[in-house]
Length: 427
Image (cartoon, rainbow, N blue to C red; front, side):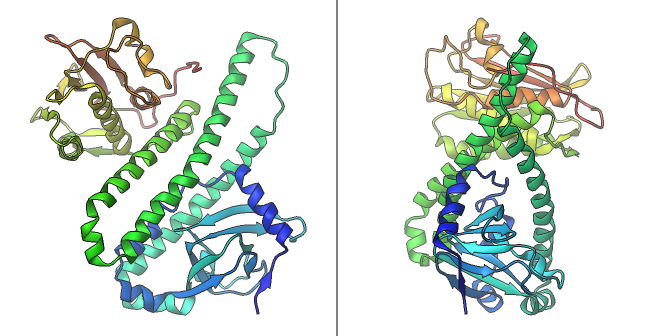
């Protein structure tokens, strides 16, 4: 027999969601969702049990015995702790997200209560079926174990971040006694505003992205084939929005020194070649794009993901301003003990007075002949990421003709820890 929470509690939980700091993982980026998309459907139907919950239905209560983990196929649930009369909200879970995963790993009572905030469809995986999956499909089961481990680690980190952000948001603005105090207060308010913007963007973006993934799962093959171009455009646009949100988050983290850097050794040449091919497809042959990478280029010791994003941002910036039949080139060579990478274009160029300020976020050049809409985040991200690696980035005129040359350097050997941020006020 199912148990229903009071309508008032459900309404209160829905209202509180707007102020709740969501974890960084969304349904769109959930590795569990990606695993399901790539897994055989017959295999899924044999392993998962479907359950439908009406609005207000309690999926399970804190202290209940349980052996099942759930994936939200559609709908929304709240995770709360304590009495229903005065609960503590831990998190919300939407389409593509999981909860109750500890039930697969240990035989302990439920540590929280789950309430459906709208009509919700769940897929359950109990311990018996999980153990069977471990035996029969080692590759899938190993992936699930890795996902669950990473999920628990991120939940702990997100909870600590959420507690800190909530405390900061409720601090009162005090009277500022000096110019330094005023700038510090503006910096804090800007950081909180950024966190709220990211939170508000993630919810609708996640809903769009997971809906596209679900459509690709349930539509007949002939319908998918007939609409493959439309789906590809929608998915690419969603990925671009996700990239924008991630850039905004990374900029904030790097400014506050909270960004994590995964330092590894890798080759730049295959990365650049892959980016060129992907960009040529998106550019639809409107511009010429090529690469000139020195054959004896040494391995880079840096955060691969961040350097790739720097290159993506510089290429995207060039694409905004290069006219049709224009030219973009990526070159890299070893120079003066450093690795020097250049993204040059044949666009209108950047006035000398703007060449420093364009690396500040929410800023665009004032003298550009061709105006493009944007948030001015890409170049701000580039500057912070390169400086944290101990390098520098700048823009200059080409030797001949119109255009711009964005150049950044990376030391061939960088410190074990990224260099601290330089003090800089952003408005």
